[in-house]
Amino acid sequence: MERKGGSGTSWKGLNRNLTNYGDRDFSAFLRSSFAKGLGYTRSATNRPIIGIAQTWSELNPCHGHFRELAAAVKRGVLLAGGLPVEFPTMSLGEMFVSPSAMFFRNLLAMETEELLRAQPLDAAVLLGSCDKTIPAQLMAAVSANVPAILLPGGPMLDGYFEGETIGACTDCRRLWTEFRAGRLTTEQLDQVSDALAPSTGHCMVMGTASTMACLAEALGMTVLGAAAAPAPLAERFRLAEMTGYEAVRLANDPLRPSDILTPEAFENAIRVLCAIGGSTNAVIHLTAIAGRAGIALRPSDFDRVSRQTPLLVALKPSGIFQMSDFHRAGGVPAVLHQLRPLLHLNTRRISGRALAEELSERPVTGDGTVIAHLDHPLAPEGGISAVYGNLAPHGAILKHSAATRSLLQHRARAHVFHSYDALLEAADADKDQINPEDALVLGGAGPLGGPGMPEVGNLPIPRALLRQGIRDMLRISDARMSGTAFGTVILHVCPEAASGGPLGLVHTGDEVELDWEHRALTVLVDDRELERRAIEGHRPAVPERGYARLFAEHVLQADEGCDFDFLRPSPQPE
Ligand code: FES
Image (cartoon, rainbow, N blue to C red; front, side, top):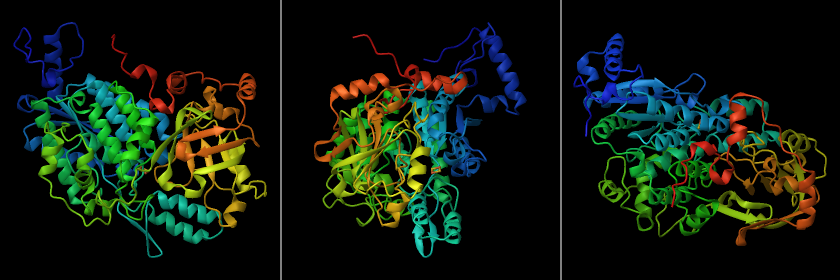
């Protein structure tokens, strides 16, 4: 029920979340006076107020069109009778922040959550795109639990190099590797550089940004069909207008993230992740978002759903297509149609309607080339596995769909590195010490050690081996990997080396074994010897001040989504 103040003031709209001056009526008077200072009439501020969280920045090309996108959202809000108000939050351009955008994901989540709670908003539109933005915004929305809808910014258009379609960043890494192997000239590399990011929008393969946009849609936090339309298309701007319209409906009929983000919604999202061959980073992000809702996801949950979910989408790096093809083939709604027998169809979407109802209004499109039919999948299972063992007691992740089959059952001599720089130096040294059947092992690149778990898990193949034509070998680390990369790469080893995990106890020359069939990752060293090595181990120093200190003192491990411990809800008493 709407509450009224002594003067008949409504505490909704502009009077929501009043600044504390000791007298609420005075605070409301002051705020309305200063809203007039913004040029708003009383008639404007009496409407539902829709905040638009703006993440545009000149240091974030993926969000380069966000001012125009916000204008389209505003049009939708105005047409529906609301008052749109745009406010800035930090912008995380993946290649433009150090040490990694992941290091700042929780900071963006905190900032967005607090602004959603602190400002006079009846509902909010969250404009997200580049890798960490959508996860951070969903984490914020869950914790603030205010009516909020997400609008993904859409992928870039395709790039072209020597007659071939190329996509960031599957082809960034592939072609860089060719350059390192001496098969691409500096001039050719320059042409690649011109073509990798040909328009605004996020990376156009099934990397982390595309994956998280698809998962936000699968979770029900966007309008149906919001993920795939490329950023420069008119359709993207129509989606923005629709999102603005929907936000006003949300303000009038409040539905909160807690009504939408149920365990069933997360299971649907994991299923879509597996069917689209999505990024391993989504394992961390979905775990963090679910954790905010008090729902515990573990690496084994992803493995379980992956075993039951066929791979349907042939996008890079698992296939040959890009997001523009996915869009033409029907995008996420087409995937959801195929997955119908495996989904919880009664989950509610941001519209307030059930998934089944919304899907029934979307025609099934596509000929099965880009999005395969459920009875003719690209692979019988999804591409993500979780492995456990004495090397990863809390689990590690492997994208087996992007791995070399023969390396999935493999025992290898470990070459251990405690920093990426040391690994890079060895990889470039051209010394013939590392054999193709060996394993590269990197510790110190996890949430604490990185810090911020950089995307270095796709450890570089030594140059000497590249020249022999070797493009993959077993690699193990506590780092993440770009969703666009490929290889037999074991990631997110947990607990990480810097927190005392066994990964930090492996020595060069030890044998390590991946037994993918049994989901086992082992170092063949007896427990006593590992205990002895643990006593000699040391932890990294905690930074003295600021956000880096907050991060070091509170970041959780990968199996808990790398969230901060104090941002998760306290366990409810039994
Ligand atoms: Fe922004 Fe790839 S750099 S999504």
